[in-house]
Amino acid sequence: MMQAQEVCRYYGKQTVLKNISFTAYKGEVMGFLGPNGAGKSTLMQIISGTLAASSGIVSIAEHNIQTDPVQARSYLGYLPDRPPLYTDCEVDTYLEYCAKIHGVPAIYQTDAIETAKQKCGLQEVGGRVIHGLSKGYQQRIGLAQAIIHSPEIIILDEPSSGLDPNQMIEMRELITELKPDHSVIFSTHLLSEAYHLCDRIVMIFNGEIALDRPINTFANEADLEDTYVSSAGKLQPATVATS
Image 1 (cartoon, rainbow, N blue to C red):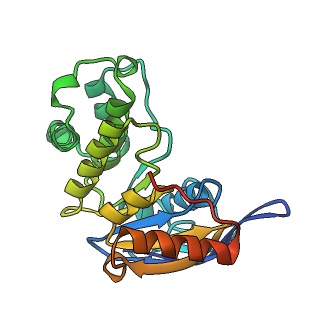
Image 2: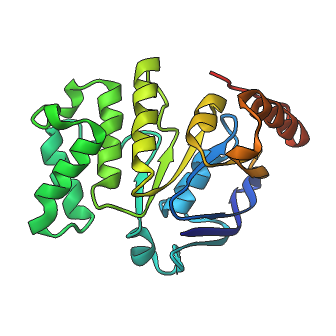
């Protein structure tokens, strides 16, 4: 569904991403695991089409995201690290707006909104103003806007960031429930989140991929942690987040 080839990103003389290559397959949950500052958010922006790569190619369903952005991005739903919310809107009004900008035909918008609300547990808050809702609900709304047009690929940047433990569990359950209908790519610095959600883990340190392996090749979560520390040590001093 998605392929990145030798993707690099520079800011002046600073290298943020170096020769990132991977292929994401239909129906899998793929997690980019690495410490804060490793380049994960920059990569999520590039593969979602919101930031241009300095070099390299990202293609989605064989459409180049830089030369054919409209077609490529039609396959995508994207939740950045800060949900793109209009907080003075009611939930239903905001989702209606999102359905329109994603090109959902008018006759299907009501169904699309209700389906997104059902998947994200928002049925009871449709008439509420967004700024009056908790961080957990705001993350759910951000996820709902990402899936409202039924994209084949969903990109999530640190979806559990800022959530309390119960909200983190709820978000992980939502991501698991999306798997049958979507391919999911997400970034995280939490080993436990990667271990329990992913079919495949890509470890990224200092802007480079250190390892790309299916989750079933790790004996357990402790094995994943040991591999993470070992891989980090090859490219930079280890920064390990296990909670």
